[in-house]
Structures are given as structure tokens and as C-alpha cells.
Length: 89
Image (cartoon, rainbow, N blue to C red):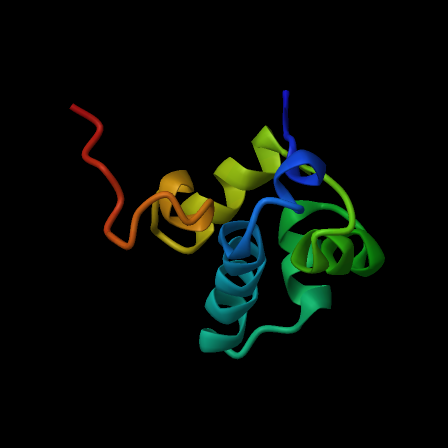
């Protein structure tokens, strides 16, 4: 399953905010795209494409990003401003 960004890309700033949010989280930890790509087991070029919104982000990658940044996928997708992840009850 993929997060279909291409459709939403034309719909407004929410999608842009999603990519900016992912980039900001990486930069807040002073990490390079290369370091994130190594964690995600992809190339730096692919990771860069994720941050720019040039390719769809696979669900598995989105979950890994949320886990890495200790937040929820909803936060990454800009569906909430609550950075704290949901409890796994």
C-alpha cells in the first residue's frame, strides 16, 4: 500500500506541509538525508524524493519514519498537530 501523494499534491498546502514536516524532523536531529536513507535501507536519492514529494512514500517507510521520530503517521501526514504517538493499548 502506498500513500497516494500525487492526487493530493494539487489540493493544497497539507501535502507540502507533510514533506516539510518530514524534513524538519530530520533536520531537528541534525541528520543528513544519507543517514536517514541508511536507516530506511534505501538510497539517498530515493529518500530525497520522499522529502520533495516526487514519489509516493510506501506505508512501511512511513511507519518506520514515525517510529524513528517517535511520532504518529497522522502527524507525519499532517492530519494532526499532536506530535506524541498514540498509545498501543
